[in-house]
Amino acid sequence: MNVQKTDKKRIVIIGGGFGGISLAKKLRNLNAQVVLIDRHNYHTFQPLLYQVSTSGLEPDSIAYPIRKVLKRLTNFHFRMASVEKIDVERQEVRTDIGTLTYDYLVLATGTKTNFFGNAAIEKHAMPMKTVPQALNIRSLMLQNFERADDCEKEEETKALLRFCIVGAGPTGVELAGAFAELKRHVFPKDYRHLNVAEMEIHLFEAGERVLSPMSESSSKKAVVFLEKLGVKIHVNTMVEDYDGEILKLKNGETLRAKNMIWAAGVTGAAIEGFETTKLVERLNRYKVNEFNQIEGFDTIFAIGDVAHMKTMEYPNGHPQVAQPAIQQGEHLAKNLNLLFRGKEMKPFSYFDKGTLATIGRNRAVADLGKLKFGGFFAWFIWIFVHLAALVGFRNKVIVLFNWAYNYINYDKAARLIVRPFKR
Image (cartoon, rainbow, N blue to C red):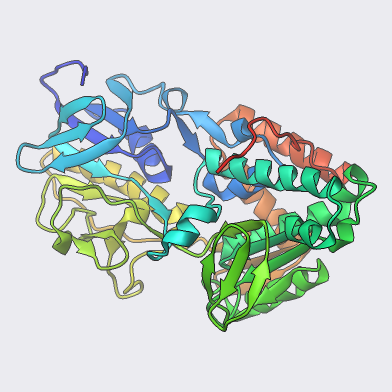
């Protein structure tokens, strides 16, 4: 890999998500060479991916060029590459464009969709972890509506208009709410000769309630909001199989649907090169100490979703959301500064800023410390928090404009099949 040779220590960061970006930004004044590797040349604001998949936003409003995000770093290099393996003995990162040595290595690779070993679901369901995947969902949704508008068979039309979302965490709940808003305000105007009332939105959850990471009161409020929007909620219901048309439940029931979105779980995006003992079984997260060092290594760190830091408050590791990744990235930058000055590092302590989930227009739920509430005020806070967290002033302005337009006109303007979806 063609990266300028230097006498300075080289810090290699793998992953341009929340953790990797927050770390790199804070290394601006460190006397080291920083190299960030990612398979995309942009940072994705994943909390708003569901709005891309439901035509609320264009993809470029939630993505931002990594080189532009980190343009103020002086001794910085970015390489768009897929990392294939880490050679911990030689201190090398092997990628599809070459090999790079490191003095310090930070893994911030995040997560990938977890299909729990179900090959059929992996083949036929629609995941939503990346911008291209969100665009696939948007295209499939609109293509199926176009097909339904020209369909003469009633059962075929119903299958085309039936949307099944598996997993009732924040992603699944927000998706269900967004689809319901399309059914209520947008599609009746677009497809005037189609009975849009036949559109069904099913939300499946294997656990006992929706939004299990949040409080029980927020879960109950979310159910009320979703049911008012016409979403059919199925708790204690496990999806066992899907062949692209027939969705099979563990209880033996079946449902014919042409749209199935998998939001049922994630697993750490671990990289080959480490012993399996360094990973938490089934979760694929690296075991790290209070300094984010991977067990057994002084110069290799893991942050964010791929790191499993066991504490008294979080015996199962920190939640796999943006805030732990951001805070760990910023904290690791401080520790690397201390390390370079020959001082002792400080242990990481997570500050939980709360959890928010939106369920359509004027509806959201919030767990902010001891405060648990829902409705318009929670929705307003959700908007403010997400706008503030977006990377890039341009993106903030575009998203705010789109939201204002959608709110005033009861519309979602990005209903474009730019790239038709094909399996």
